[in-house]
Amino acid sequence: MTRRAGPPARRTDTHRRIYSVVSRIPRGRVATYGQVARLAGMPGQARLVGYALAILPDQSRLPWHRVVNAKGEISARSDGGHMEVIQRLLLQRERVRFGPHDRIRLAVYRWRPRS
DNA sequence: TTTATGGCTGTCA
DNA sequence: ATGACAGCCATAA
Image 1 (cartoon, chains in turn green, purple, cyan):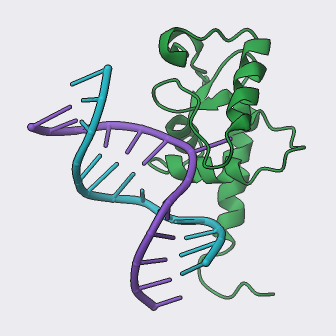
Image 2 (tube, chains in turn blue, orange, purple):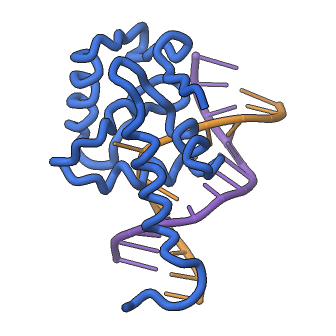
């Protein structure tokens, strides 16, 4: 194994928890990166969520498109940017409406898990 | 090892 | 509303 002593498999566990939370976001609802981080037990790690989703394989079944930034917008990718369009389509397909400035009204569509 | 990004965010001007 | 800044930390070079 290449992994030595110290923090045991943190990266793996981190991604695991992030994906776990994302998989629970119901259709027609969205969550912000920061929100996912908090729910995953790592408040303030919004960027980690972005990383975890960025390396997601294309054939992944995870609802990555239901994660948006704090303003309710689809965050810009570093690459081409075609995924942003896909994300928008996927959301509209599950009837999430976009308001002015390509924004989603978080007050209306934000996911609110019970516990 | 060090440095520079990066699907972010809250605070403050 | 917009912009600068500072945290946070995984990855890539």
